[in-house]
Image 1 (tube, rainbow, N blue to C red):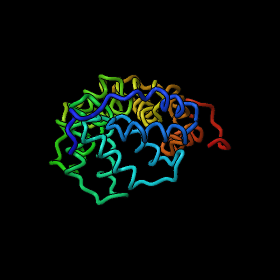
Image 2 (cartoon, one colour; image 1 turned 120 degrees about the horizontal axis):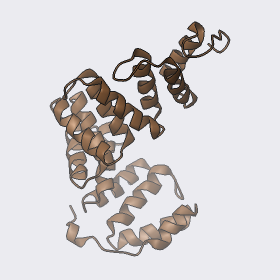
Image 3 (spheres, rainbow, N blue to C red; image 1 turned 60 degrees about the vertical axis):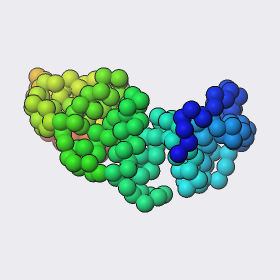
Image 4 (cartoon, rainbow, N blue to C red; image 1 turned 180 degrees about the horizontal axis):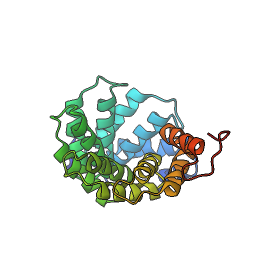
Length: 243
């Protein structure tokens, strides 16, 4: 592993600007130069270009190598991405224990996505011993930093009382916060608790609205519930054709 002390501070403003403007080939050349100088940030962005096939032929194996170089220099997002590669096991052999270790290193640097990734491993008992309490704490840390997906995940734990005392009202509040961010799964969840009257007053009109928002984003569960509501005339005018 490369010592973090060896990571060089390199001016990457030009390749970042080229990338933003869609000049991926020029960005690639700039990041290659920075990576050769030992910049972890440049190494991370080289990984991104190879991962996405921008300015270069897509090569996940090479992308992983660059992400690993950056991760070994304590680049937080690179550490998380290395964890994702190990978690998914599509490009390299799956190693959930190592995925958890990289997520942990990234989360220790306050990477909110890594907190959520690690929490999901604890929920599923994948690479770590299943522990809903630890998962809830990680989701809470990420949610407090504004991560909508973590808000929804934490709401799910409160709804079912896993790792935290069951509290439908807290669950509904978290679903509402995540739904405001445009997360379709949270919109579905908020629609469901509004339909059931759990943690929030029963409001079929509000439920139909949330299901509609999620349905428009392609959420199949919401489409099914909205179909039922149109069929029965619940919260909306009965309309079998729309159903």
